[in-house]
Image (cartoon, rainbow, N blue to C red; front, side, top):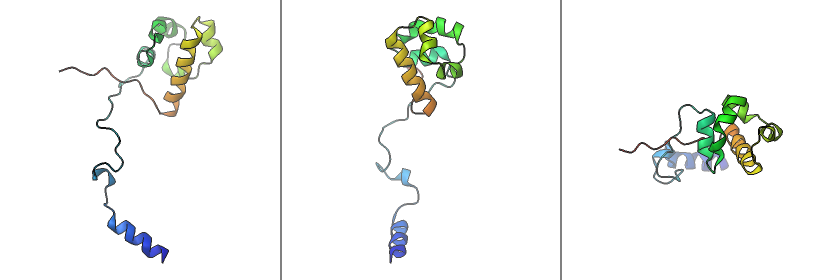
Length: 109
């Protein structure tokens, strides 16, 4: 009986769920992401004054992959304030997990 119910539900549902308006789509347009993410793009994506440390972090850390695994003590030794360290670490974790990427600047036509 349960198998017949499952078969009936599968047969009545459309094959491509994304074509049905409003089923799994909660946003109107896809975000534009930066193609290459480096330290400057990452810090500008965070905002809130963190981009002031671009030169310092690029010279000391260099790569985005090294920045993502950097600990708070290393950032503290570089002289980055607590508020900015918290933001960098928060967004670095989100970036590693895949929940956030810095957006590219929208091209104005």
